[in-house]
Length: 119
Image 1 (cartoon, rainbow, N blue to C red):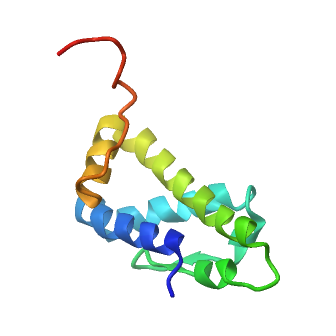
Image 2: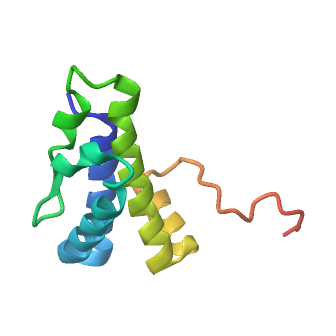
C-alpha cells in the first residue's frame, strides 16, 4: 500500500510536470529533499529519480522499528519544502492555482480570505 505522502507527492508530480516539465520538477524535488533531510535524517535514504519519482520514502515510512508518527513526519517535511519552493519561484497565487488544479473541489486558503475586504 502506498503511503499518503507518496500519494500527495505523485499527484503533485503529475500536475507540476505538465507545467514545469520533467527536468523542472526533478530539480525542485531534489532541492526540496536536500532542504528537508537535515530536519528529517530518515530522508537520507530517499532519492528523486530522473523522471521526478521518489524512491525510498515508502520503505522509510513503513519500517517497523520507527514510530508511526515520526515515520510520516519526514514525508510531510519534504512536501512542505516542495510547496515552499514552488511558492518562492512561482508565487503564492500560481502555486495555489496549481494545487487547485491537482485537487479540484478542495479549499485552499490563499491568505487573503477573510481580510475584511468586500468584493
